[in-house]
Length: 65
Image 1 (cartoon, one colour):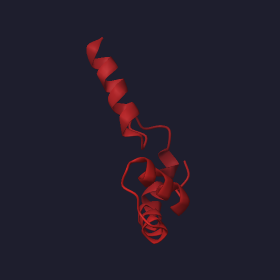
Image 2 (cartoon, helix red, strand yellow):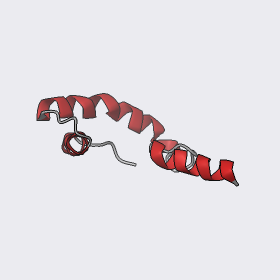
Image 3 (cartoon, rainbow, N blue to C red):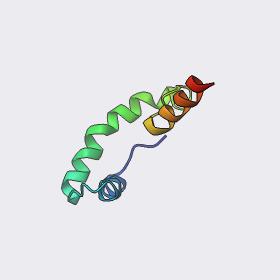
Image 4 (tube, rainbow, N blue to C red):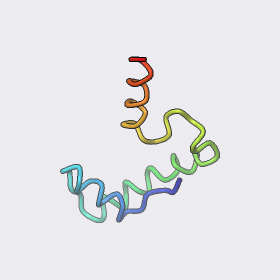
């Protein structure tokens, strides 16, 4: 798991339809970076691994079986 860069944040916000300028993307990257670093030791071991859509999909499949 890597901390997203300002360039990656900019691309994600553009795709989401909420574009931000480069300065805002940099501030977002700087503010969420510590959270990514804090979870690095357990990355890949949690059922909710920083990707909520997949987590919901798995929970829905488990619930229906």
